[in-house]
Length: 469
Image 1 (cartoon, rainbow, N blue to C red):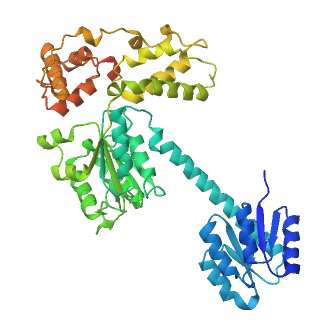
Image 2: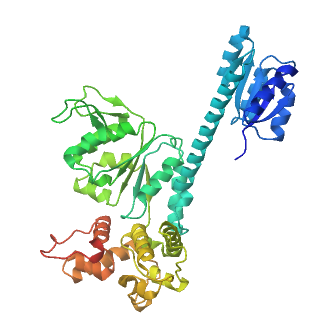
Image 3: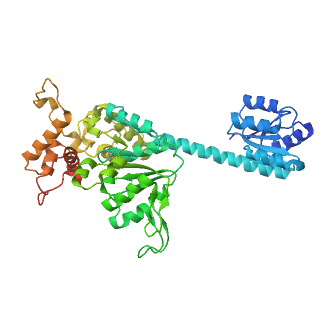
């Protein structure tokens, strides 16, 4: 490990030499300069961790040197040395960004103590910067794998809106990576150093959701023995991610609307509202427009949330991305489970591209993890793949399609196909989903999207499709 590098700028030769010796005896690498100009030249020639400068020097003063260092080398820590009678100069230096100051005569113990403390501060600051860079790489838009046009269009729009405080609504089926996209937006915004707080609106009992979101005061209800901050308050200065916003009950939708409009919340039992500064990113797999028409979701809240609507395409609509995703998950799980010698032949990748992946990227990731864990040999064979990946389906060109010369709407074709499948099985959604090779959840999502109403309730005794279990 390299020794910390210190530069001493001092016009008094004897003092400069004493400080140099003391620091070298403490294990530091030390360079010296007799004036500010020489110190700047040494900084330009080699990186330094810390500069110790006298405030009173001929030509460029210590304050001038400090200003130049903070402007050109902001990562370098500066300690100033001043005479006992000019402490006000040291205070001015602290305001300009100096870490600390020493008074003359400089005592060895005080020198080592302040230098050691300053370098530890420098080390911790570098460590924080490194962690932030690591988070940036982990949650950057480039970490969302795929080069398909549909995905890239969404990522480009997300990158443009990330630096703003605009409210974002992310739509997409379960498992498409909505939270991953929300985190990428947060970590590419000016709020990146603030918290990223998530809450799944469909996973918390309705009677507890208001307190979980907005918090409560002591005595607000039976069992409220102390004050509690809600998720909104915990996200102060950062981003609140509301997953499955379509599950939010109507009474709480009004309170969320107040947050979006007035930037304030009402804690349960609190006598007055509380101002908050948070950015809202919401996500849903449901068709909120259809819910608005049915009265299940507030229209004014929908338009407040959908300032920037982003659509994450399902995996079956970005088939060209599947080989890259398979390779990424396969290599990652090989390292995770110590199976570096395991090989996945290229010819097996086609099996992954012919399946429709109703659970999207999350399902693909889980399948690859099981494959790495359960493959007995050092090479994946066809028989090691799950049965649904080995199953052959009729090619699309076997279906007779007549395309009109004036063009056709893809959404209209999909809507009609779903309607025909439902008619074929008398409204039985599970059978229709199995026939279309999608999950029942996906079928319901598409029915909501296109406004297709089910004929009635699910038939008694109807078994869910295997991928829904």
